[in-house]
Amino acid sequence: MKRFIILILLSVHIGLALGTDYSRIDKQSETVPANLRTAKDIARYLTRNLTTPTEKARAIYIWITHNINYDVSKLSTNYSYSDPQELVDEALQKRKGVCANYAALFHACCQSVGVQSYVIEGYTRQNGKVLPIGHAWNAVKIENHFYNVDATFAAGFVENNKFTRHFRDMQFMILPDEFIKTHMPFDPIWQFLSTPVSFKDFDNDNFEKASKIGRFNFSDSINQLTTLNTKEKLKREKLRIIRGGTANKLVSERLTNLSDHIASEEVGTETANFNQAVSLFNEGVLIYNKYVSTLQKGKGITTATAPKFLEALNASREKTVEASAIVTKIKSKDPKLNNEISTFRKNIEKKLASIDMEISTTKKISGE
Image (cartoon, rainbow, N blue to C red; front, side):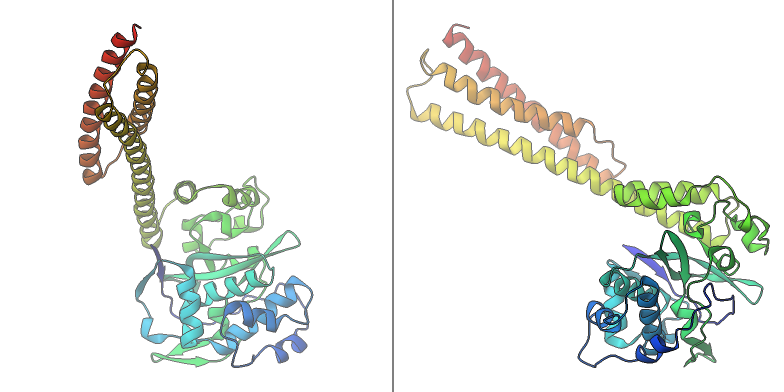
């Protein structure tokens, strides 16, 4: 289950990456027909006459910042969601949300119209101070370049525990070396910098390395994400964060969450392997029971029937041995699973002993 941290809403000017006139797109993107209720339908409507990824991302950004209010009731509160779609649905149904909702909705809309986007989690620096609370935002990849987008900060501001919608166009298509001055991703690949800024340097307002050319190939790491399973993604992220140097409280909490998630994934994998072993064992038992049933209904084992019985017994044994091989490789830290494995191994030993005894008897009758 993924945890999203709620962020206080502030606005900050960090400069536009592109000096483009979006007035035409902005005007037509503030509203959509009331009958459009899904991210896919809204995004397709907004971009129906647009052609470039930048224009499409802009239309989505404008609609979200003009129609989704910040949910002050969730300010500084931890909420858990099992699926990002829950965040999207919540934002569209309530027309309000927090940074995680804004980011998930922007991402879902972009995906619906072919704009490559990402949800990024980290923390921020505002008015010269690092906020002691997490945040989520987006990035888009256009023509092999990465740009940052923060719909939450652009939507308005919170004052005296009340949200005021006040669009400020300072959070769209921001270049990485500018954005890093206010937004620090937990995972350095999302800085989009060949020389990542360390957590310590960010916290100390030191960005000398941001514009330097280095050897960190963030693009390759991002491309590899599609080829990795969940556990491997988490393990690599954890390693990259650790390499980021001295961690503050937020980073330490992230590392703890990653460790918990990795452990959960490992138990899930171990359980899946255990279930596979049990399934194979049961297949072997079914074959063995069929052998016993046939034996009881017939005249016992004869030289004529022995080969057929041996074939069934060997098939049962093969399934049982395969189950044993799988369960032997499981090294779990979960006490409950280990108890189940221990009991299962004993059952395997007993079943193999029974099978081997039957095989020995059958071979003697067959003359082998």
